[in-house]
Length: 328
Image (cartoon, rainbow, N blue to C red; front, side, top):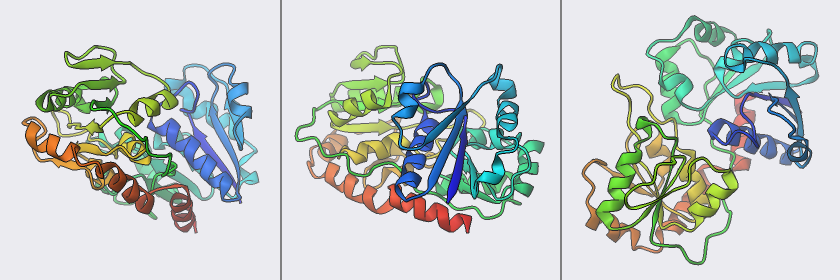
């Protein structure tokens, strides 16, 4: 099949979850024998990066992307959509401004719906026309149902990341937290959890140094994975905002950690439980029991359990087969 993936966020200049998902999904579809073209926002000279990929990347030029991005993509696609068997849009705000496309599929990742108290008219309209929806967690599927019950063909989609990137022979004793510098991400909780265990923490995504560790700010996915690989465990303990909205959609960093044999510590917020697998679920992340956490961390088999679980719940093959069933 010929498949188009549409996104504003794409490497190398974007490092968030949508960017990672789009690249991983395009790679998985290509490996499965499909012809894939990614349409992505132009961010400068990315030819070296793009030509090294096994699929085609078309960069779309435009200005004021925050306001007009969907329209730039719409104009770039005029006259081209009949070339594809399926068109998959990475986010609904982008899809809402596209031309009428038969069998348009829309992925759902998190804050683009979890921060909404009510569905805006554009989302309601898209719910009537989109052929299929692919939230990346059951929690996001429930959020989609809350906002637009009219959505048809909703299929929770496994993440297409590689599930076996090799387990590090030796891991350090420190903990790591990968999160944007936002109150909802619960970075303060992660710092306190590390302090309760007496272990240092490495922050990725936040530049302010914690009292018990180091901070690296925003770095590439490859650099992030190198730091995760050396950690004892990853912490993701987000919260909702004051209105109870904005819950974590899934927690890709927990799955990435599992892919290198690093277990995770999480809480029951949004889709985190789904990404945690056999990890340690904290009932009250604001009152961590350092002794209990350390006893869990001292079990060397936790990393292997995490990776084994990941292989049965996510991965390129499972993601593609689930996607294809949802598109039939």
